[in-house]
Image 1 (cartoon, helix red, strand yellow):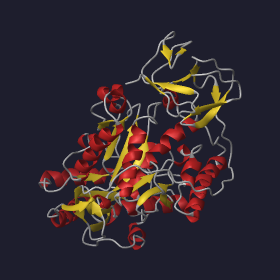
Image 2 (image 1 turned 60 degrees about the horizontal axis):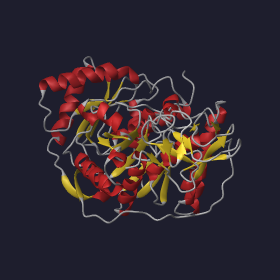
Image 3 (image 1 turned 90 degrees about the vertical axis):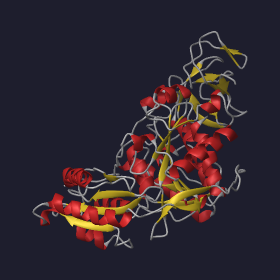
Image 4 (image 1 turned 30 degrees about the vertical axis):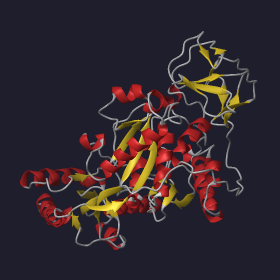
Amino acid sequence: MNDYIIIHQTDNVAVVLRPYKKGEVVEGVTLLEDIPQAHKVALKPIAKGENIIKYGSPIGHATSDIKPGMHVHTQNVATNLDDVIEYKYEPSYPPVLGYKSDRTVDVYARKSGEYGIRNELWIVQTVGCVSGMARDMIEQFKAQYDTSEIDGIYTFQHPFGCSQMGGDLALTRTLLQDMVKHPNAGGVLVLGLGCEENQVDKFRDTLGEYDEDRVEFLIAQEYADEVEEGVKRLKKLYDKMKGDKRVTKPLSVLRIGLKCGGSDGMSGITANPLLGRLSDFLSLNDATTVLGEVPEMFGAEKLLMARAKDEATFNKIVKLINDFKIYFKNHHQVIYDNPSPGNKAGGITTLEDKSLGCTQKGGASKVNGVLAMGERVEEKGLNLISTPGNDLVAVTTLAAAGCQMVLFTTGRGTPFGGFVPTVKVATNSTMANKKQNWIDFNAGDLVDKMDMDHLLENFIDLICDIASGKKQTCNEKNNFREISIFKDGVVL
């Protein structure tokens, strides 16, 4: 296969798929300098002020004259983006690749009508002060009882729930309540301290509908030995959930989050398009995917807006984008101060460059739903949700929306996992081979040895095996399970 790629016929740059040396030739152009892997090289003269075209769209403009064969990157390119803008409803629906499938997954049916891909026992903490107690409860429970009949018992540490007020406190409570009702949990102990802002009683009263047989509440300050009491409550939940069995269901029961982190110049060429194809496949089979990272839609948002299923959905996307821009401005921050140092080292030059690659995870399907942070998925097909680009916050928010797993593409590598299985998809084979203890799937094979259709089938196999409990993700094997809650307010 080629050692470089021209993504769109109108592009004036190519992306090299291996490191190139000065003097080598790309598309008939002799390189004037070394070009690192996944970085861009000019294919024709680009005058100062002229747009750099990649993915068939501008990713910024030249800040100096660029000769053919020169490295095109941050030293000679700047973003075209600036401030909040006006948008017009101009629907356009590209062709969607995929097919109807009779594949199935084996999942846990919940009383809510939802389906979990794991049957885990969780301690959800209303406040950070009880983290030590939660860990003690789990250690003592596991010392006393055999937990082999379920998929594990876990707690998720966070620093919030006290010294918060207003919208911050409300969002903390909402996201934790979403966790309590998550179908991957067969039983949940809600653990509070007693004096925190996020009071257990109010938490329970505002929880909405939930399975009362599968949720227990405990206020630590009310018991002489709160750990002993916690173990009793856990045992009560365990006895109810240990008989749960998987049932075979169509793919339509799946809800999958889409995320990228540690992106590089290969992200928009391999792993993100793979997730886009999977998202389209799932949409065609009445399943659900959810795309977040709103700041990494900036510069590509019009492509998503054009795919809104109707004008009302278009208006929700506009609000999603502009609200996040206003959030930046309210904190006196530059809206387009992105990509990160790691992204730039990996070959991403501007936010447009990053966004056009990032949004490929959403495929080509219509956008059927738009969610605020803390809202849970209701629409089948592709949804957008308000999250920052931050890995832990975004994955937590996607999972809280009801996603049973999150697919996470990465070019630089990362070990973390959320409170649901977090599938790491490598953008390049070098990193995938180096970090096999982090990476679940190598989309770099798309460059090295396999076409997209075959790679997609292998990926679907993996997703179905993970959903059915036949395989664990690396984050599950490593027991890396973390949450982080979005914060935008004062600390009391």
